[in-house]
Every structure is written in C-alpha cells, then in structure tokens.
Length: 159
Image (cartoon, rainbow, N blue to C red; front, top):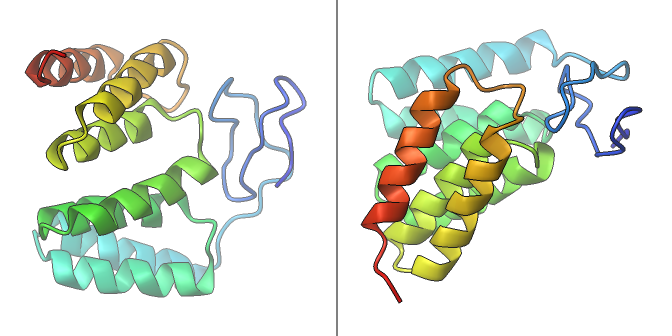
C-alpha cells in the first residue's frame, strides 16, 4: 500500500484520497469495469433488502479485487442484517484495514461489538469514531454521525 505524502498513513490503491487527511492519492488505480458492475449489483441488492444476494455479489467483488473498501463495508452491513454479527465484524475489520481513518467504520465496529455484548470494545470504537469524525474527509453529514455516536455511547451499560 502506498503512503500518503502529507501524513504518512497507508492508502489503498483504490482510494482517491487519504482517509486521515484527505490528500489526493496519486497512486490511485480505479477498479475494473467487471468489479464495478458486481459492486453496483451488490449495492442495488442491499438497497432492496436482498441481503443474501448482496453478500454473494460482494464476495465476487472481493475474489476479483480484495482492495475494494465498499465491498467490505456493505458486506458487513448485509451480514449484520442477516443476523451474522461475527461475520459482519470480520468484514468491517477488513474495511478498517483499507481505510483506517474512517469514522463510519469505527462507528459500525462499535455497534457490532455492542450487539455482541462487548461493551468495553464498543465504547473504545465509538470514542475513536467520535475523534475521527472531526477530520474524516469522507463524511457527508458529520453532525448526524456525531448524534448517532452519542446515542450508541449512552445506550452502553456503565461499568
């Protein structure tokens, strides 16, 4: 994986910008058309709540190109929707490996750990998501994510 020339973080070959600082990734290599088609089919199935079909398409994407962040991210969401929380957790951890600066990934890891009954791990990821939300260049709605993070933290059992 190439490193960001600005902050030194590792950046996936498929990401257009660094997930920490937003610096453009000059080494970016777009996915192939067949991978993009399968990814779109997975997203369409996900949006139509056809999670098993979505899971199949995301697996096909990842067989062809294991660096596709969205495939891991939505694979995790699809698996979670099917009640396969442990498998979802593994997929979301793969997404984090590709885009470690993502507040959304840490938020979802926090929710998955909460659902699995690991309150301390959930809290750690949710607090990490809160910190990353301040600078994550990929966030469209920072305030909305911050509110969701706070709701999830409040819902955790106190030690």
